[in-house]
Each structure stands twice: as C-alpha cells, then as structure tokens.
Image (tube, rainbow, N blue to C red; front, side, top):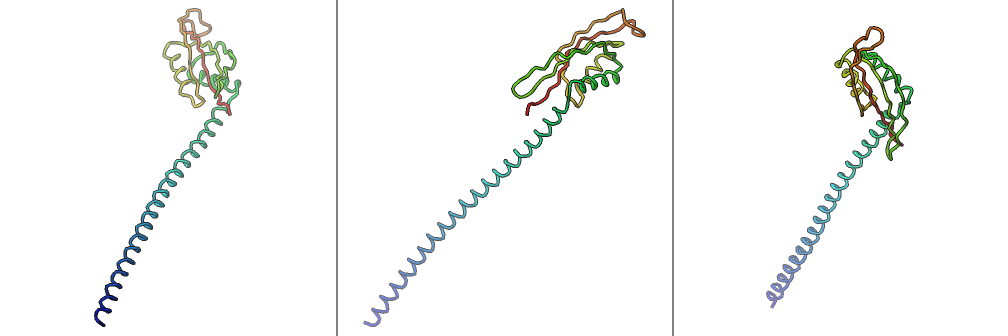
Length: 171
C-alpha cells in the first residue's frame, strides 16, 4: 500500500506541476500581449509627437512668412518699385495706388504704373525683376504700345501700363 500512496502522490504532484505550468504560461501570454499593446501605443505616441513637432515648425514658418509679407507700407512699395525700375533702365511716368482689396486671409495692395522704356526687352526685364523680387510683386495687367513722342533721349519708346499688386497677410 505504501507504493500505491507514493504513486498516487507522485501523480498528484505531476498534475500540480502541469497546472502550475499552465497558469504560468497563461500569465506569460497575458503579459506578452500587454507589452505588445504598450509598444504599439508607444509607436503611435511617437508618430503623434513627430506630427506635432512638424506642425510646430510649420507654425513658426508661417509666423516668419507673415512677418515677412507684412513688413511693407505703400510708400516702401513705391520706393522699391522705383529702385527696380532704375536697375532695369525704365522710367516711371506715374504710380497710382488703387486702394486695398481685403480678403478673408490677406489684403492685396494694387498699384497702377505707367512706365516707358527704350524697347520691349528692357520693359520685359523690368517686369521680370518685379516678379522675382523678394517682396513678392504680381503683375496682373499689362498693356504696351510703341510711342514716337518720347521725352528727352527716348524719341522712340515702349510705354507700358501695368497693374502691380503685393499682399499683406492678416494676423
């Protein structure tokens, strides 16, 4: 009988060991699943932080551009256009501010220019210099004609009527 009790105890011990191993396996699986969920959440948070930092950089750039675009007055615009005309060898006959055109996000300041140049190429050089200038000028209308009644050294000349605009971003 002694052997049967020992055999019974051994079988009982083996069953207990298997039950303990099964419980440990289930605990290990649950912890592994929890760690995987934490890693997925960590990756999602890292992506979110990266996007937020990109948004922050874009907001900083937007502030810089707003300050850049808004660093203009009508008198400084006219002065800058005068310098561009001088560099391009174009005479400005008249400059007239038309009046601001307000939109939801920005204000557009159009100016009407009448300019005279020796020929078409010099006039187109002036327009090109306006459009590539760092202050962002846009030529929205242009009409050209050849005139033979020029003043001074320009007896034969090209006369251009332009509408030039620049913008200020609303804050």
